[in-house]
Image (cartoon, rainbow, N blue to C red):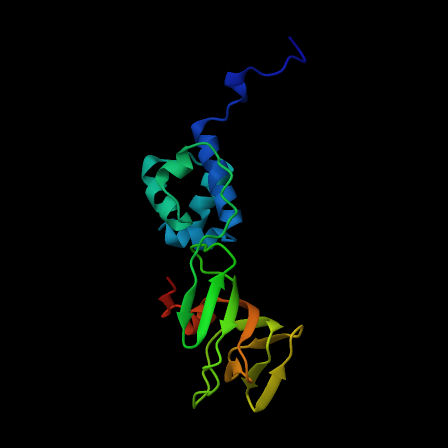
Length: 202
């Protein structure tokens, strides 16, 4: 009869539809392009696009590669959608006079990540030459005075000030006198330079 609500059976999405919805949702959540996921899953971009849109049926052998590309288990693609825990539980690291606390979840693509930094008083002598790497850094000083060497400039960044710069310019940051606390947003190259070789803080 017209106007009656659908039965629970008809309201339930098919397994194929559920997996497609999960693919799109996880890809959007992680900020990944079709090209990035397709490359990581060893699929053509056109194939992934057709899988997501329902123009091609998912096959069992697609699932392991897609799950790995999205950083989840196959069961996570097949099961019902669950709201992820929003809390960031990655532990702090210490490296080269900087203790860092992650403020964002890690996605498989290694995109922009936010951190709280404590720059210790021991970090006061810049290296020679100053490091250069691909990427872009953004920092906001919460407390203490930050010394930033950027090309030929020797700058003091006060609490409440922000800086943004290309890391292709020779650069280094440390303290003027006392420890500095700041918020930093880094790309993958900046993380490798400042964090990846760090030791976990117990």
